[in-house]
Image 1: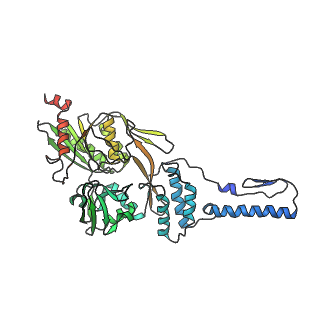
Image 2: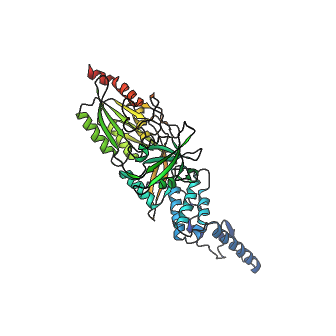
Length: 453
């Protein structure tokens, strides 16, 4: 999913290094040194030739990746560098000279593909952005499969904590081995099979969690509010990513409420939500609860399309690119329903989930209930690399319709309700205080009260 961005300037094009004229009658130029068209003595000519030789040697030393032919491994490093150079959201590349970073990597010994991948990882690490990362071929295929609706592993969405360096849980996937084991958002993953996660990149940790069905992995975890460590042994399995679970609920007053739990924004999510809303409407749903708790996000376009199901008009999200240019995605109607809507959020609500929640809140289409969201306000694009690997690059940041930048801040719900540990069996039941609060809010909606009178 490549995006078109303007090419940043290169230090010197090849054409600028070619065709130096040595005709004395017209003079010649070498890196800004202009020589006059006069007759030269042998000694003076020798002196100027020596200076020219020094300049050419300096060029070959400083710009080996451009002046000399690149090896296959160097070509892959240069390919990644060019993509980041064109697309990365920070034009200053984390306050560094991005060209010199390229040269340092090309000067490293690249004897095989693993050396090359490590050089690329080190180059990207200088950006200090955990979301801009190399995806080797097997990981890239796994990610593409994940967004298509299936996954083999433990079903755990993770991120790297910027301050501590530990792995942190965004959310377990509903019904996955991690979910069944009671792993919660914000849990820290201290070790994976005895390996300290401080020493693992995000992709290395994700690869450690994946594996063939039936194999096992042991995690050491620390809950945010508890000092003690606990060990959890998980059996990897095929995780079905059915993104939507829907059912008809009743309030204490007898109003019929359609409950929709959206677990991920994959390629099936928009169609699944639309079908569920239509089905619940036929069953007499008078309002809806959209549960985005522990939804770590997914495809940006899916988040936008689902917002359009609920919004007749208005801005869904603003994106801001590296030049600071604002673009927007709009709802152009008609919406699928205008029935009252409450959205459940918590600290595991991230990325595309926050785009949807922010759009519905700022357009006054829904009331948000629950906890403060995760706070991931950055957008990544995926780029194919020539060897079958992939590259995830942060290409923009986003703002909600009211221009709130929620990165590392999160979205604050309209009604803050503390959460309690829940299992699949107690989710959206009387044991779930956030769900109960959502039922209360929607039952007091003027539209529903008017239908009941």
